[in-house]
Length: 337
Image 1 (cartoon, one colour):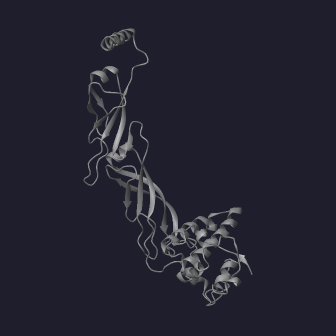
Image 2 (cartoon, rainbow, N blue to C red):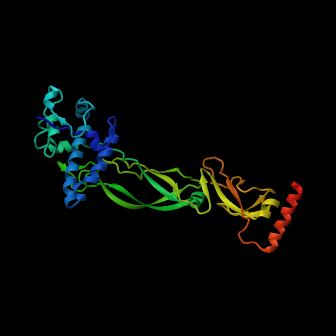
Image 3 (cartoon, rainbow, N blue to C red):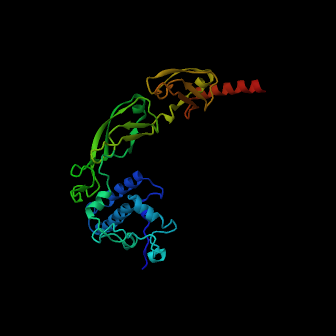
């Protein structure tokens, strides 16, 4: 009898060459998302079906023997295709008695057609989903938004994040006694929101990563927590543009300053400095303040600050200024004539 083929890899959203860690990670995320207790109304019924699909897929792909058996069906099948195990010559049927009918309650006809019936208890089926020894928690990543000043000076920043805490009822195993843990729904962790204090090293730049040891996902079976990786994202700044460790700002000069040169005070990320304007400076020209960008880290040199010149001829000038410009034009005409 034909049944609908189930693509367990597609259900978990993983590639066919996914390792055990990726399989378990995908399962836990989806199980948490679609756990029926987190839904209500009409959505609850859909969540129950999704939750069954996810558990069925994990049941097969987390077990090397069953996964190998499933993979031998080939990769030309698509989810929902009509599948008749009778045409497979019985090669793929599990006749060794891995599951009882009670175990397969809620699993699909496709699952039953491939793995058959047998005598393993429902509790042990759930036990197989989780190792019983200590397992280190997953590493997690979070974006850390910083102002340019925070990145320059460093310091301590409070960050509120959503994470998971170990389910103490089952010690992260997902089972309690002979059944699924009722406290966490078999996931092994409980969602929580917490505030952590983050030490920001001076000189972090856009894309930098800060590692917080032991602040990641909870372990199971008394295993240690994973690490939390914070990826730095710099907020737009009203004055500076950031390019790696270098910063750039725009400085507006009067025509006389550009032509004759002089000294002007400009801001930096530290304190203001005096910048020398060379005579004959052009609009668009960049002047460099060496070492005035973001600080270097671990022996690296600091970045530079670039000052891009803009010359403002003025929109409202006096008659006296106009007369001076006329005299300058006359000088140019005599010189070039």
